[in-house]
Length: 228
Length: 118
Image 1 (cartoon, rainbow over the protein chains, first blue to last red):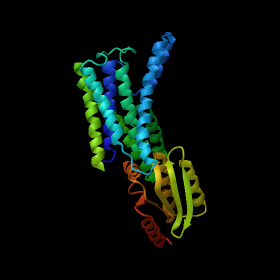
Image 2 (cartoon, rainbow over the protein chains, first blue to last red; image 1 turned 45 degrees about the vertical axis):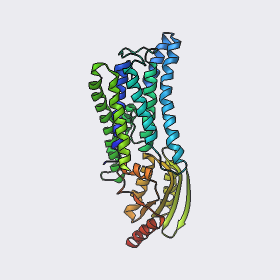
Image 3 (cartoon, rainbow over the protein chains, first blue to last red; image 1 turned 30 degrees about the vertical axis):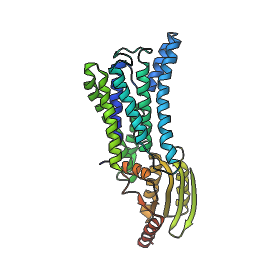
Image 4 (cartoon, rainbow over the protein chains, first blue to last red; image 1 turned 180 degrees about the vertical axis):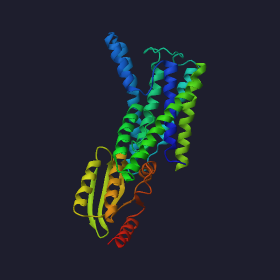
């Protein structure tokens, strides 16, 4: 099995989570830039409570990243092999909570129009899960792959393509750069495929569509064990 | 990141301690450049205390390997932890970077290379 497969599955899961967030709550999930932009627009409208509400959502992404790094680095700092499955399990459970909570009506109703006060808990939970997954993938692949953050990946891909094209043909550096560029492209494709399949799963306007990324996250945990 | 250096009969030893990432790779790059300028061709890199390696760190190791290969030199890594080896596998470097389980294996590899390219 290719060693990067579990991490590409997480990019797929992240694509599905973002589609779910957009369709069920009218907002992207792992898109901190977007939350910053929305907060700016609310600021112009002098809706200060909305500004604060919107700005706290990406804080859950930050919190997820911190939690994940704490769980992974605690072991690596002690010269132990990291346990990636623990933070991923938390992430999978959070996504299941959104699926079940939404289905039984505990969290906000399925609504494609974004209202900061209406979709807070769903987006907060999904941001937390995405932050965890993104940090795990970054740690496990040495920053070569990420589960989300396609803007950064596209930037790296652009730079990598130019670097590979100006490097000496057949050189080791060019081989490495080409391989990394292929992995980045695979990450983007996985994310898009995850988004596409999720759009199909969410066509009945049901929160149960979130079971798709939850299942894929669990699959990536199983694959990472199989790899070991 | 710290680099502990030692001159061994099989080559220049560098023990990397900590994270070899985009914030620290230039330190290792500078040390390789220093030794390459001094005509050192054989390097033995102790990876036992690398907690994290990024693509920037991998580039330095690949670049050093590329620079010594045409002059008959070699870079031998040893003791990389599983999660560090995994990053090398993901980047497709397992055949390019010489990874050894023990320092003795890495030293034996370098000595064999020295005999091939005296």
